[in-house]
Amino acid sequence: MGQQIIRQPDGKFAIFSSTSDVGCIIMYDADADKIVEWFAEQAAKSAREQATRALEHVAAGEPDKIYHQFALTWEEAMQLDREHDGTAWKSFS
Image (cartoon, rainbow, N blue to C red):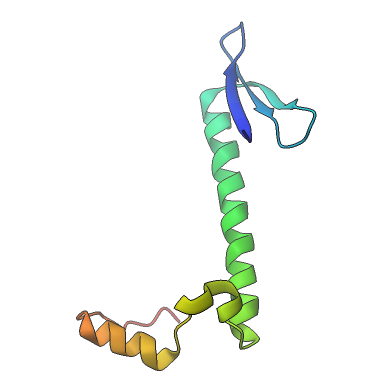
C-alpha cells in the first residue's frame, strides 16, 4: 500500500506508511501544502537515485544493465533522431 494520506479529526492531514509489517504514522498535523511538498520531495529523491544508478552503469560501459535490450549507442540514437526529424544538435552542456 505504501503511503496513505489520512484526514485527522481536526481537519489537518497525516501520512500513514505501511511499507513494513507494522504500519506507522510518519507525518501528522500537516496542512495540504506540507503533504504535497513531502510527496514531491520523495519523488525527487527517487528520481535522483535512479538517474545516479543509470549514470553509473552508462559511465562503466554497461548501459544494458539499466536499459536492457533497449540500450542505444550514440550512433543508434543519432540515426533514430534523424529518422524522426529531431533536434539532436542542441546541446545541454
